[in-house]
Each structure stands twice: as structure tokens, then as C-alpha cells.
Image 1 (tube, rainbow, N blue to C red):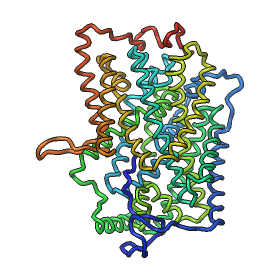
Image 2 (image 1 turned 90 degrees about the vertical axis):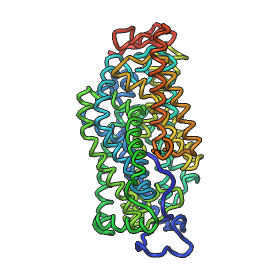
Image 3 (image 1 turned 60 degrees about the horizontal axis):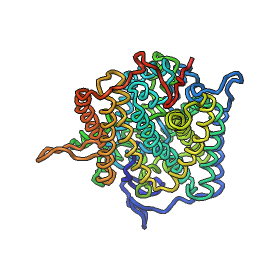
Image 4 (image 1 turned 180 degrees about the horizontal axis):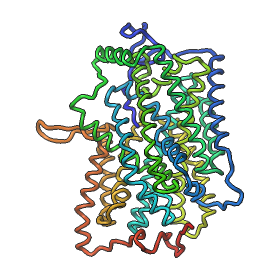
Length: 550
């Protein structure tokens, strides 16, 4: 998800729509809300109660007779049923930043934000087409990460290393944004995230979840996902009831928002000239989401391909909740909520502070915190496994046992969590968002080597590697030269079309791979052995040890 930093308003507080703002304030700045210590304590109590319940739900050690193994720790033994897969997949894709940034985007830019809803709706059919097939190959050959699959399918160590590094590099800012989402909650209760108290709260939250998930792995995350689903569902119902009771019917709210937007020269519709940007943002974001390692990890953990397909049919329910959260962004705009310039993510927390009693606000903020902590932990696990299996073991310790892999993954997991907190605290929110946009461009460049190769082996492995390099360089360059603008105009003369940068980079990636494949074949460059078609299997670099999972 993204927030372009064009959020309207500045500080919490309901005002009469159309009324002049208080003296000394405008749409871009207002005094901070100052509420008493007793109120903060009430909010803190509700926050701690909700987060504590989530931690207790996941606190269960693995069976004593179960040997440490990456498949058990990172994939839950590939035994997640339909309900667990659905809850964990939805809980991983729909993050706290999603629930904060999408309404913030509606609050700041209007109808263009609806691309996020379209892209989440596109996810279900795309997952059904791609991920069950990848899950079957992974289960058959003992694969855990996307880099494992690339190494086996294409027989290419450089391409597998590029896949692992791209996944880690692109996911780190995504992980950092989960922390940014939680800092928005802290700011809304008057606690500066970069203060000692704010840092302490973030560290304690992550440590609590780390202590639960370190021994339990993905199984603990699956249990917490049930708590998240209940919390988010309850939060939607409660906040919707409060909004309608205070502001009137949805039609009235949209009418108020439309009137305020018209007065400011803004619209909650999608301008016709932005249609190509809207469409490519939706399609590119959906394809990119499939390549993130946390999504692939959950898909690999499902009990079977049929289980994964059945679980995917329920994902639109998560999109429905996201649509309601987007409506809260419209409600905040209609109500005259104001946030600091570039902080549209504060719109919904400000709305909660204004509409809910303090004890209830604390519960709602706790729900948002759990919504961010769960996907953050799954991201950490997926990145730790990529580092251990595809970098540490592949190049430094090829004879490592499965038990050693699990132990080796826990250290990097804690380091990644610490890095995410530092990332979010040391960087400005807008810089973090820009890096996340860049991460989306990067992760999409894995589509040919991973998703396309599930259906064809026509592309040469070296052509895929060079196509990946061209896509990474061109996407990074376009985004950087355009000041991190997500769309660029293409065309000439009187014909111009704004297009998502990641889609342009992917097109160049595929074009290079398609042009070079016949050339490499004509030159007789070896293609490499396809391990998924009865080859030698997944072997570690420099070792004859073949990794096999019973």
C-alpha cells in the first residue's frame, strides 16, 4: 500500500463541514490534541489488554517429540487447514498499514485510492492460478522459499541468489511500514514514537511477539491470526456504528465529503485521464503482492493445493473490510478531521480518538497494533529463511543440518525486527513510503523467474537473469528520477498515458528475456537442469548433500 503524502487537514477534531477552521489553523496544520494523563491511561489499558490476549493466544510450545526442522518452524509442517490458511493469508496480506494507509489515501487523494480495493480483489483469482501449483512443487521437492524454487527450476545459483536478495531488499521497507503504522497509533495517543517511551513501547511489542513465535514458528502466527480476524471484524462494526451515529447515513457522509472536496478542487472519483494509472497500479500491485516472501511462505504451509484454493475463496471478505476502512477515510474528510501535512495515515486514528470513548479507543488501537504485528512477524520469518537457506547455507555452510537451520534463522529474525524498528524511527514517514514503493518495483521483477516459469521453461536462465537486472535498474532509475512518483507518462505527441513504474520495468524485463533466449540457444549456452522434471533435486552449492523432506 502507499500514501503519497498529500493528506488533507492537520489535527484531530470534528468541525462543521464548510465552516472556517479555527484561527491559526488550516488544512495543513493545527494544534496537537492535548488530553489528560487519566485518558491516556484508559487508552493504554485497553491497548495492553488486546495485545496481551493476542500474545497469549499464540503462546504454545511445539510438541516435545518434534525435531527442529525448517518445515515445522517456518511452514507449520505443511499442515495448515482451510480456516488457518485463510486467516493467516488474509492476516498477512491485509496489514495494519493497509488499514491505516488506504483510508489515509482516500482522505488525501480521493477516488484514486480505490485501486487498492481493485488490486485486493484481483488477488484471489491470481492466487488460485499460481500459488497452488507452486505449493505442489514445493511439497514434492522440499522447498521453502522462492529462491529454493528458482534454484531447482532453472539450475542457476546466480538467479537464485538474485531472487533471495531481491526478496529481502524489497520486504524490509514493507516491514518497516508496519512499524510506521504502529507509530501512527502511538502519535494519536500523544506518544512520540522517537521518544524514549515510544521506542520502549515498540520494542516491548516486538519482543512479546518474538518470544511467542520464536519457538512456535508459523503455528503460533496461525493462532494469532484468528485473534486478528476477530479484532478487525469487531473494530469495523464498532467504528462503523460510531461513524454512522455521529455523521449520519453513508449517503449523507459522501455528500458532505463531495461538497468539501469540490470546494477544495478535489474529487472522490477517478479522473478519466488517470484511468491507465489506476488500472496499472491495481494490476501491478496485485502481481507484486504474490511475489512477496511472506505470501509465498503461507501458501507453502497449506495442507494441499485444494486447501489453498478453498482458503482463497474467502479472501474477498478481507477486501470487504478494507472497503469499509476506506470509507472511514471519506468519513474523516467529511467530518473535517485534519492531520499534519504528509501524515494522512493519522486520519483514522484521529477519527477513533474523536468518536470513541477512551477505553474503547484503546481497544481499537490495540486491534490495529495486532493487525500490524502479525504480518510483521511472518515477514521476519520469511526473510530469515531466505537468508539462512539461500545465502548462509548455500554459500557458507552447505552441510548444515535442518536443526542448525532453525537455530540459525532465529538470530537473523531478531536482527531483522530490530532493523525494522530502526528503519521506521530514523527515517521520515514519507521516505519510508518511497522506499516501499521502490520495493514494489523490485519484487515485481521476480515474476518471470518465479510465476511465469510455473507454466513454461522456454526462457533461458541467463536471459531471465539479465532481464531481472534490466528491470531492477530501469525501475529504480525511473522512480528515482521522477522523485519517487509511482506513475510516469508514456507516449508521444498528443497521446500520453500515465503508467505504474513497476509495470514498465516488468515489460522491459520480459522483453529482454524474450529477445535473449533465442540468442543464447543459438549460441549453445547451457540451459541448466530442471530439477522439477525429474532432475537431480535440490542440492546445496558445493555439497553433494541433497535436501529431502519426508
